[in-house]
Length: 389
Ligand code: GLA
Image 1 (cartoon, rainbow, N blue to C red):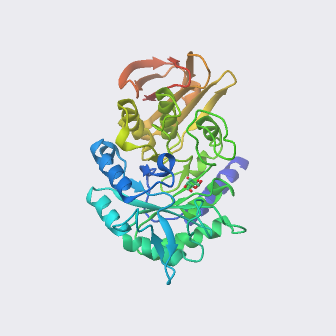
Image 2 (tube, rainbow, N blue to C red):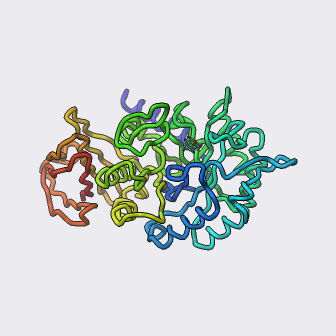
Image 3 (cartoon, rainbow, N blue to C red):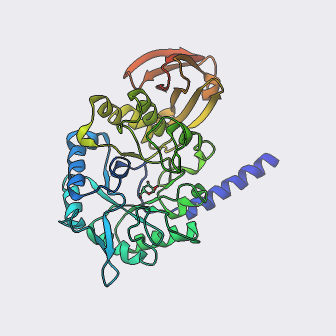
């Protein structure tokens, strides 16, 4: 009786939460694309964005599922006499509309950045007090995705600030993915689904394996640890966002970048490449376009993976349920030495005597049927990622 009561309560709470979830029909799977910030910072221009969009197509990334080309901070310089936001006339000499038209002509979508406060993190004009005006402008330009930051917000309230922009975007008449970027400050996983399609869960990612920056930022392992316990808030149309990818930016080894990418897929995270697409090594290209790993991220069930094992001697096991009664399993070696890692069927919720087919997603190879457990040698800071069926 007691159990039934709890189940009924949980069911109605879930129904209530779903009723309040933003339903703009967008981001049914985690958004995929490219964002200028991690590699280029404020050094953005229409030439850079055009090049990135072209490379997205030529490199095969578009075919692999990447869609949004997002200009991050510093495209904007001022407001005109009527309060309209003004793009940098030198760096974006053709204007944002022409750029968006070009991006659309390649079959891609256009994203842009602003901030809920009085100024962006880069000190450019923020959106506060101009939400409806800006949303209308974005719609006129053909913007499909808005990342909305949280600098210079003083005493503003997170949920209501983001709700204002959500309403403004809805009012603009154009479907625009809404990416909340308030760094996990006010636990956006608790309210983000009613305001946006994705919400940053942490401080900025750093291009390093682990460790915090001097002032802000966190390495990949630190960010991953911060995702544990908030998995249940993600689902189709509303995603936890552990920040954009650093894959290919030079601060980590290819093995570490492969782990970073695999973990983001297990987390059903938005896959926003953040590197120079014009100068990718073959190894980085192969990581970013691994369609089997991307399929784990994009699985239509939209269930975020969970860490089922965290060993003090430095290894994790992550599991993500997939369509077709399959599971993605990630063996992650966080230690300094190569080691053998074993996942037991009990950790996957499977009967010990069940025979299961295992396929390696980085080797692109079927490993045959396994019973009871699966073991693999995993390099230091590396992963073995498989799908079981
Ligand atoms: C914040 C965000 C970053 C980036 C910068 C731009 O730090 O978290 O992702 O958008 O601002 O200034």
